[in-house]
Image (cartoon, rainbow over all chains, first blue to last red; front, side, top):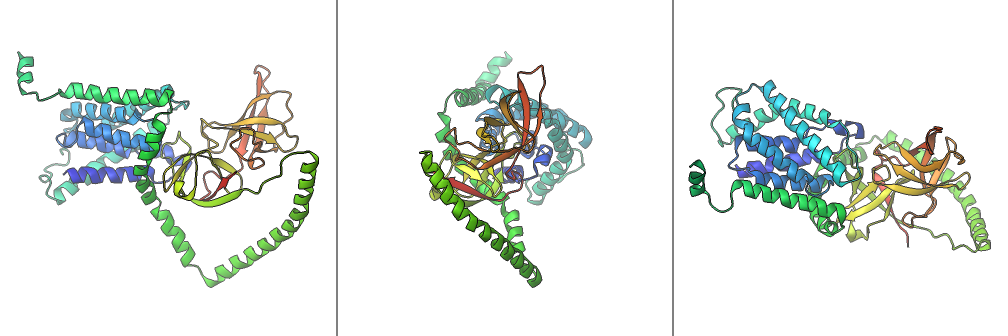
Amino acid sequence: MRLLVAISFCIAFLLMVIPVDFEWRWCRPEFVVLLVIYWSMTSPQYFGLFSAWCIGFFQDLIEFSPLGINAIGMMIIAYLANMLYARIKHYVFWHQSLWIFIFIAVFGLYSNWVISFVSDREGNFLFFVAAFTSALIWPLLVMFMKSIQVRFRLTKAIHNNYEY
Amino acid sequence: MGNSIKLLFTKGPSYFSRAILLVVIAVALLVVGRYTQWLEPVRSKLDVLTVPFYWASDIPERVSVWIDDRLLSRQDLEEENKLLRNKVRVQESRLQQMGALVADNLSLRQLMNSSEILQDRVLVAELIGVSPDPLVHKVIVDKGSNDGIYVGQPLLDAFGLMGQVVSVTPFTAQALLITDNSHAIPVQITRNNVRTVAEGVGNLYELRLRYVSSTMDAKAGDILVSSGLGGRFPVGYPVAQVESITFDPGEVFATVIARPAARLDRSRHVLLVFSE
C-alpha cells in the first residue's frame, strides 16, 4: 500500500511537469493535491500530515515556488480532508466533486495569498479553472485508484459506486 | 475527564503539536527564503531530486523528434537539403560583407578608444522542461555545471535573448525568462541608442519598458537590444520589438509594450553564452 502511495505521487508529479502550452497551463488539474485529498480520505493510516508536508515540500521544489508554501497548503488540505472524509465519502460523485472544487479553490486562494506576501509575483483568479478541471477529474481518479487497489488485492471489492 | 483519558493513550508529542511544529518550520522557511539568500545553496542541491521528473516528462518529445528524424521520405530530405543549401549560400554571401564590416567596426572602435568586440563562445542546449506554475516563467535546459554552466549566464535562441540561468545542478540548469514578473533587463533602442529597462509582466508575449518619459523618442516597430549596462547580459543581442506606446496625460510615464524577439514558447534548441 505504501508502495502504491509512493508510485501514485510519482505519477502525479510527472503529470504536473509535463510541458503544455502557456495558455493551457492554467487548466492543468492539481493532480498532487487531488492525491493528497484521496489518500488522506481513504487511508489516513498510511498518509498523515507529515507525509502531506513532505509532498508539499517536494512540490515547492518542482514548481520553483518559495520553499514552504505548498508544504503548509498540503497540510491544510490533508487536515480538511481528514476532518470531512466521514461525511464526504458517502456523497454521490458529483457532490464529492463539488467539495473537491472547494478544496482546490481554498488551496489556490491560500497559495495566491501567501505568494503575494513572500514574493514579488501577483496571483490572479485563474486558479478557479484548475479547481474546476480538478473537480471534473476527481471521479475518474477515485474509480481508477479503487480499481487498482482491487486488482492488487489491497482492499475489498467495491460494493457500490458511491462508497470507497 | 475525556481529556485525561486521551492523555493516557498519547505517546510522545501529540498529533496537534506535531502539526504546529511542521507549520512553524514551513513558515520559518518562507520567512528565511523571503529575506535572505541562505536557502539558495540548499535549494540547488535539492533541485537534483526534481531532475528525473523533468527528464521523464520530456521523453515523449524526444521520441517524436527521434521519429521525425528517422522516418522521412527521400523526397522530403532532398527538398530540405536544397533549402538548406540555398540558405547557406545566402548566409555565406552575407558573411563576406560581414568580414569588411567587422574590420570597419574594429577600426572605428579603436578610433573611439573602446575595447575590442569579443566573439562570444556559445554552447547549444536543449530545453527539457518548463515551469509547471503559470506564474513562474522558468525553463530547464539539459546542460549543467558539468558543462561549465554558471549562474547568471545569458540564454538565447536563434531569434533573440531568452533569459538568464538562475540555478544549476550538475546535469541541468534553470533559467529565468525575460518575461517573468521578477525579471528586468537593460535595453537600448537601436534607432537612437536611447537606454531603458524592459521588464517582464508575467505574459510570454509582452514586455514593458519602465520609466519612459512622455518626451522619449520611441516608436512602434523600434528594435530593442541588450545594452550590457547591468553587466550581466552581453551587448547587442535582440530582446524585443516595440509594439505600442500610450501616452496618458494623467500618468508620469508612458506605457510602452514590446514583444520579445525570442520565441519563448516555441524554441527547443537554445544557446548559452559564455561571456568572459
